[in-house]
Length: 347
Image 1: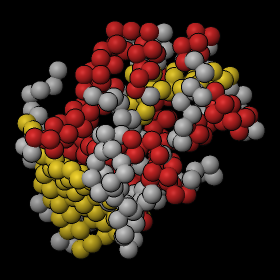
Image 2 (image 1 turned 60 degrees about the vertical axis):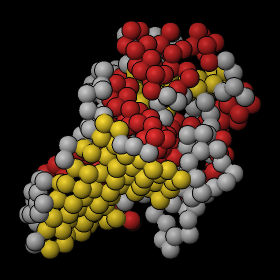
Image 3 (image 1 turned 45 degrees about the horizontal axis):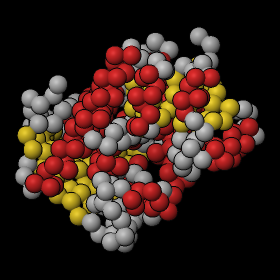
Image 4 (image 1 turned 180 degrees about the horizontal axis):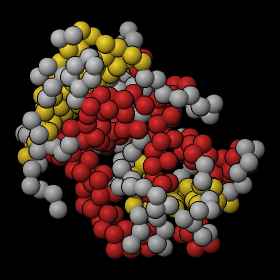
């Protein structure tokens, strides 16, 4: 199949890395860029032109969809409905939507339009997380098995100054659960399946932001108690793992640990067995975000294969709707101070 032509609406911090990852995958060509502030899109287009791409530039997303014959468009939540109206396959950045009703309407609109709807949820595509999943699924190895898992902890606790690169995050009334919880909940689902209960507590440490910057969430997931801890309170940490997500899983016969610096450890009665599972390195990636930027490549490859009809996408809109249910249930729990029962609420 010939190269697919895609467009990008929104040229913020992450866009150049998304585009670089598409180039790394191959098989897709950037045809158009759109940004409300056209000058910002033009700066990125000039930068890309020096790398061999020559996208058209627009300030109006509807005009872009009218003039360009695109095989897919990379957008943020408010523009998914527009993609559905023009019957252009949509890849939506996370978080998928600002509320559950909007998320459901987006999925419904794309389904009715008969177009693929994907969510660019790359966290589960990190090399160390895929290795952890493989070790968990294998159930046994020459070093033994951890047996049935019963408890796990997923962390994203950092002193990294995330507001410097993305200052708009300060304005969000729903911040860390929507921003990082969407990643951690998706990984929890990837590892353990669907949740049947949830309890959440939040804090706001920064006084100059609108939303919460600390959250602790307990998920009941088919007999596994999963704690998701997240904080961008800019704590003073002796060793900051940013942007890695340490994970610890306890089983009836041992444990699996994804530790900082990409160490994967399996511990059973036979002892502890360790090896590193670092991500690939790309010249275009920001070293501060190494494992995250590298994960965009396999995520894009998976979505491209689905667009070409050569495979199934993992992170469809339908699938990510389950992650969004957890995000908004977490806010409900934090506000009420009570646990939320999730089983049986899915449409």
